[in-house]
Image (tube, chains in turn brown, cyan, red, green):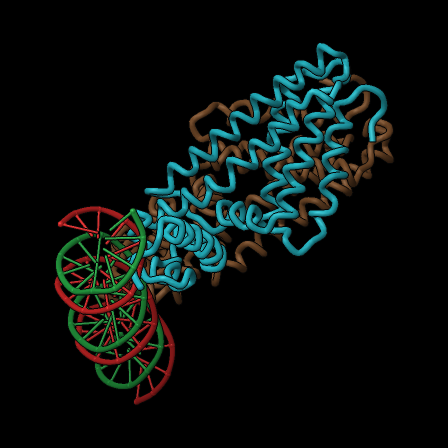
Length: 209
Length: 209
DNA sequence: ATTTACATACATTTCTGTATGTATATAATA
DNA sequence: TATTATATACATACAGAAATGTATGTAAAT
């Protein structure tokens, strides 16, 4: 039994991506040979090379599968009309991002691979640029939200929207790296919603935390 | 001419570490073969295996050479007696950290290698823990400094020292990652002192930024 | 005389890409 | 609808490159 139906072939493709994710996570990207990935997926290298040109292409497919829906989700919250105060939207969006990261092992694994199990050189150098793009987009989104909050008067008086956006930008990136990079054993995951609330409280009107 | 004097041998060792740094940075750690490192250092693999057990040991030596003096330097500022306000000490220490990163190519390269050119699995998994330790130490230091600032009344009223320490902790980690990870082309480096000032201003008494 | 600081040579393993084989799903045709 | 042709979805086999660790050789420092 060699030739499969289109659906079965598509399933094989998904199996390979999932196997690659587990393998990348366990052994790191560079030590994850196509043979290892194939075995983990229950196929041979022939199947892997049929569906993907090389290892990098598997990596990109894996990343795309996880990134796209996640960004759609957080953006939906960021722009949800039910939030009168843009600061509430930002807080909800950030909290949701880290909640998904805490809840969904697949998403968490992909981020862990990208943060600490991949070397960004040669064919993966472009990944870093692609990761940089969402980061720059995020900075832009934050600036718009804080500007809107300034207009509405919910941003604490005297605070510069751009400066606050940069601060939140770095803060979020740091949270992500600390959470996935080196603090896996701690209870950081649980404390994150509170930390985000604190961060946002610093820029709301009224008294602090 | 084979046998060298002790001093010459020590120089060879340093040459290998420097060659490894350049090679790691260009090709990533896993693709940096001992042969490549040896060639870059102008020696053969024999010399490399004489001075180091394996590639991981070169990596650790390289890291240690850069980390130790850097932490001593920033700690010296953090605990300098000339700062009456702990918040000033924190700001000076953080600014100095990023200034060194901006000025010193060697330090920057090592951090770039650790952040985006090394896979933290197997023999390098321990590196991540070692990197995590200074991070936890830093969190602790920040909490002490903010607590002292709270006692002295320079921390803005209503702010919790621990919560502020966590915020600064994540913020700093994020700055580092954004600076070295994906924003190499931008002018982020120049803007960092201002960003740190903004970050600290958020927690000082009086009006904001 | 002995150890040091390497260079050279060797054996083994491992990974990659491609080439080839093949059974079957699917499309075309009659 | 039945038959045929072709493309698909892999598995298997092969060749070459490259990396690792070790073993051995050696000239000079100590």
